[in-house]
Length: 489
Image (tube, rainbow, N blue to C red; front, side, top):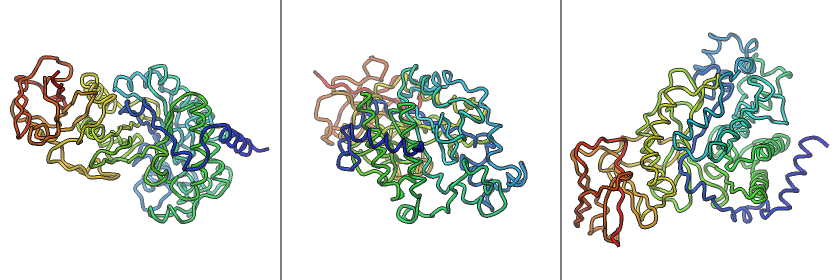
């Protein structure tokens, strides 16, 4: 019996023995874990062989073979013809000699993260873990280390939840451009890395319904993903978008049943992140890539985004976001019942770029002071107020103006209401119109208003038009003003 056949048998046994069957009706019994609902903020990590060329983005492995792209021309100029130096030739240069799992975990803890989700396998088909189904992995080549295993141990030791991300589905077509000319991709010796390299279907509607992976690829995908679960016991599994191709549908049901049953068996609350319409409502957590929602969603959702505006993996000459904008996005997401998964991209040697570490530490300082308004918080009757409109959908996180002092977001904890003011007020007073008596949204009388982390009462006046709060003189503006509004006894 082949390894794949052994895995198929094992998967069927786990499904048969557990509470979840491989049907959407059964999978709707899934419940989002409390650690996820309370955690709100996690770290995503794109790190792999593509960090060696560090050019363009983590899609360099595909675009270096795609004629007419900047990556194709860069590759020719820098490394030579593709039949003499292909993507495989970057692997020996990917040594990860400075990778320090404990150091990474300490930084993520300092950033205020509650969960950590490294990419276990990206579209390039090179697992960063000890995969028993291929010789092309970080455990056997390049770093020759079980990177994922070491990071899992360090993250858990630091008291954070560990998750994993699989982008294996996209590997079906990721290297197809290399089939069109003389390249190393056409050498059968390297099929274990590059194959199947089938033609890509363009357009979201077309890629969902037309063509797609064959049974051999799908069985391998399912076996790899379940092996990943059994070896590392992640409490979160994140998928990129291409699992929505309809050929995946029965395999998604099998994976979800296997994974949720493992979670039940291990008494470990687990969840799946999925995009668009790949999983029906109630069977997984909706993830919106680089995007927002306009209003509160009853079910927990997630925005995954990056510290960089243009790439997920490390590249030279990154264009970074600023920490304030990321903090504001976190606040906006949390006010709408969401969580933020923030990506970083380490260098090929395993070091985290100084600019990215600085962003994480700024976020950590803010959360260390104001975390009670974020972690474990709930939603109010409305998410907020203010003139700045947030575009709904994916890839919208760099297409809006900065928030102003009139933009306020609300969270709750028990009977306490938090108002997070996202811009620096022009004077020493803020006015929150949603808390005015005429708005009739806050039924309880206000007993006290203070800054989070400082119990000193602030003077306030509640009138029909709004709640006016007097701020301390010359108070420094540190990304947001977080007010704690307590009810009277």
